[in-house]
Length: 415
Image 1 (spheres, rainbow, N blue to C red):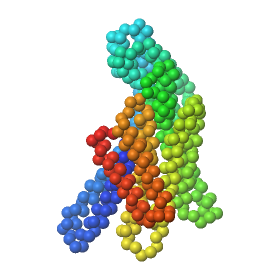
Image 2: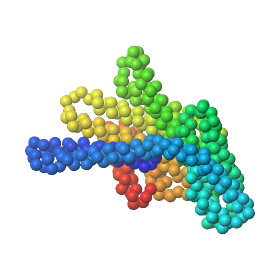
Image 3: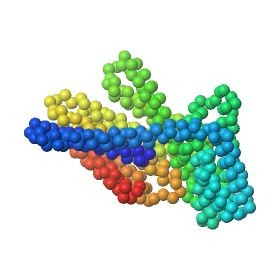
Image 4: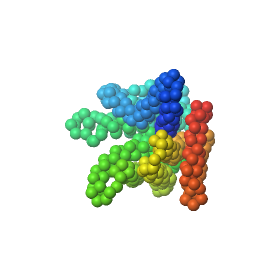
């Protein structure tokens, strides 16, 4: 998710660069035709970068889903014919070797299991955890419970697939659910593995935050579905509102869409946590993530009113000036909202892993949080002290400096 946010921010900077470059070239369109002809094709290069990022971001956010579903559907028959039984037999053999305490044989068995055809993500986690414990020369008998749990999960999946073939009826979105359980860290079996690990093994560094971060991965999926439902609902509500009051259609659709998406995604995720029997401590901590979502929604709505104010300007102003005013307001909206979602996604990532880099903590949580508090404070000062244009320019400069810094330092520090 952090990568997708960086791509969206980069795309916005390139969009601004495209219009700035186009405005710069206009000066030569009449005065110097040769320079204009030489430099005009470079606009296409900027557009190519923009569309390249759009395609890449779309693939990251959506096409991965379809690819995993298609891959699971293609492999299903092989799973049923042989792969389920191979994996279950391998787990049973691994369990016996762990009970015997034969470390050399366990190493050989784990090496063979890395090549299994049916290897869901929670089984990958089990294999990696056992390999790590082997190298650290830790006792392995604690993994017996986790091996049994993994075997039971795979047996349950095998039964679901067999029942699906025997019966003409199946649960809704069967393939999507099975592919999600097989591939994603936010799936119930994967979270169940770490819950059991926390209960049965005193895992160093593993606590409620780690479990919560895994459950927050489901929030991304819920947010996507909530956006689709809210888009339909807000569109349907507009005709009703238009009959009663005179309002801006675009503004109405957008605000209703944002409010519905936020409320629906939070309520939906709370129900998801409740169904998965999340403890009261997790339910209390999850509101840190929900608060970031609510702040992001408020920020977007505030930015929409700011954009609308620019569009309503009726005075005789230069068209280019009004266009760039609108684009810079849009840039502010994207950068400030991305800042909050960047904190959100970074917190999910750093708590998901037992060991995390302090550099990522500062780059993705502490510094963005300080910046958001700072620009909020400057906006408050704007009410009685500062000039509106000074406030906007100062905040946009702070946000741009941060995101350009992230863009420059990412390949160097690899965060």
